[in-house]
Image (spheres, rainbow, N blue to C red):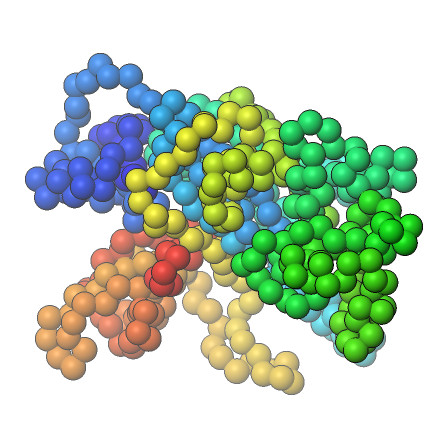
Amino acid sequence: MKVFVIDVHKEPLDPVHPAEARLLLDQQKAAVFKKYPFTIILKEDLETTQQQEELRLKIDPGSRSTGIAVINDTSGEIVFAMELEHRGLRIKNLLDSRRAIRRGRRSRKTRYRKPRFLNRTRPKGWLSPSLKSRVYNIETWVRRLRKVCNIQALSMELVRFDMQLMENPHISGVEYQQGELMGFEVKEYLLEKWGRECVYCKKKDTPLEVEHILPKARGGSNRVSNLTIACTRCNLEKNSQLIDQYLSDKPELLRKILTKTRAPLKDAAAVNATKWDLYWTLQTTGLPVETGSGGLTKFNRKTRNLPKEHWVDAACVGKSTPETLFQTHKQVLQVKAMGHGSRQMCRVDKYGFPRTKAKTRSKNVKGFQTGDIVKAIVPTGKKAGTYNGRVAIRASGSFNIKTQSGTTQGIGYSHCKVLQAVDGYAYFNQQQKNC
């Protein structure tokens, strides 16, 4: 992907090719401003009258991961792409654990915090913290990317699955979809629901077809609750058999399929719960916001022969998708939301007694903070070498650095240089985890 460039006033310029960025760095005309996403800042003010290219930021929101892509609508170039992993499930587990601990203390009549749910009212449009965190993550990256490139429009996938229409007995299955998008919404829903694999033989990475659990020859309908996904071979083998006949020798698989036919799609529900909150959040940026459905996204991806990836789906969101999409590099930035630590003063053992010392009052030691990405060059001694990774600070000034190969302890702060301050996210590429 291209490298972001900002001028001496920290205003965004047109992104450049990595080779051009290396040339500017080698000639001392620019310096590294930020490592993730990689951004350089010019050292001299350039006098140019060239108009900047207008870019579009496209978002494919998901329950666990969200795809983000920056597109040049004029040329069809994918300037930047990333996949953002959310921590909604982690937040839910932490809240469940905290609730269980508080309830346990109340039942044991020990010192506890009184419940306060009876004197609290939730505002209109309230979302649980695990859902709201997804919106906050996307909002954060929209704001960050606007600071380093000239984004003039936004696109997001607003309607992923229209489950109400799907389950309407009067407008059921693929019949409610008309035109060139017929069947795309339903099949995309089924692929998500059944894990993108054949329900009978569990094959992946093979063409999958929509299959009727109760065959149409036996009176089966096109309702989504009667549809599943199967490979061509299994679909032909089952033919018009009843599912209990076809899976008579696999009772466990039969039970799982019948149980899941009407099971709710939790991830789809999370996306549906946050989609409008995300839409109104993007509206506050003042930029025009284009919306599109999941079926349109898949149609754009299929007609352009692009692979199934979160960032590719993001690039295909909406009607503004160029007829031809191309990228300058295949490396995609992987980002994982990690949070900003906790307020717990010390760790406890399984009995609830402290097992570590209380945290220091200051989060900073010698200008460093736990989680900063640093580069340490140790010239002499047993630990001589260069270390790149995240730092864990100590009040003594002797830090630990976590690198790809492991954790190195006892690195003096004077050898360390901050590459990027901690920001609540971890970064790595598709091939190998980094920081």
